View 1 (cartoon, helix red, strand yellow):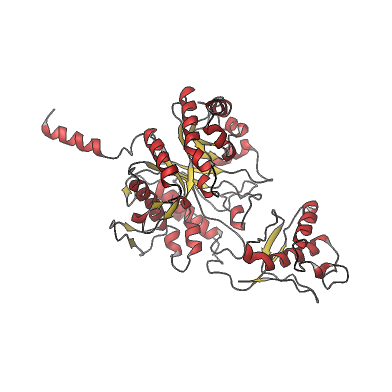
View 2 (tube, rainbow, N blue to C red):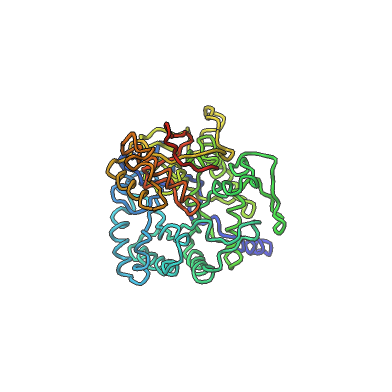
Length: 464
């Protein structure tokens, strides 16, 4: 071996091994199932293929979905539920049984490639599951090896709240309450098994919390003349997503693991939401997700400023608008598809359709914070039995919440369940919103900017 050849090979050996494993750019979709009006699993798989996706993540190990995925070219991520992590962490037999039951029967005809242990575990309040996470991952990994499932990587998706600092990106630091006892052993595991750091990253939430400080186009990955240069690293950023991803890379580097590959386990933008939720609209959702596809399907790959030219596998959240997801209205409006299977907006996850070929999008109307009054009323099609229980709950909270809808009260008439419940919901929300009360009631209520008051009956409201 010549001296220069030796030097060259030595330098190559020192480079991060980002090219190992499957490093073809592939965009996938997160297939959530929290809806009572969704298409069948087999129909859903057809819709996923029609979208041009090459990966799919499910939030369990649904046997019907895994059966429907047999023989397709979709690379599949399945998930061990949060509830059994602690039990698995100390019981190899239980881990073996879970893998044998939920993975082995489908492998390799269903291209299961990633086995995710739990979902955003560190976003939950402090509990023992945090510290059982990596032991459970080790047990699952042992099971994967035992059954000869050679192509499956084991990981766990974490949200950005695993970091206590993400700005500037070079200051990326994991939270002190988990850094040594959870993150360090996790990184060691991922490094040893050549797996990925799976991260759920949403520029929407970062922008929504600081719309005056963060430029919307910067958050949407739109081309602008806005740049940000990290004062420590000297790296220059042209979009918020790169900043957030690099903050994770720098956080891993601080703990001694600079080369673990990233996998975006979730990203997306809501196509709708509550009246008081800024920027959740079809225009922004389509713009963001199309830009994500363009960025991560680019050849040669773009990477991020800290890791230029590196492929980052990416999953967009979500396949459907899911009407049974709890929380704010945005939670039920992340889908690329409506529950009837039609597109919320045209999108091609294969990256083959240039943005210029898409038809015009509806202009956004809520990119500025709403100013005015909002009421909380019964949602269209709300279940009457459940509504009776929700009405009782709202009225039981005291403070005269429902006095005007009692017999003889100014809002008693018309004496209908929907009218009374709408009053109760508005009254409850106006009183308790500052203490965390929401206009949701398990999906029975929605916000409205249209005043439901009538005659002498004035509905309480929230003013933004």
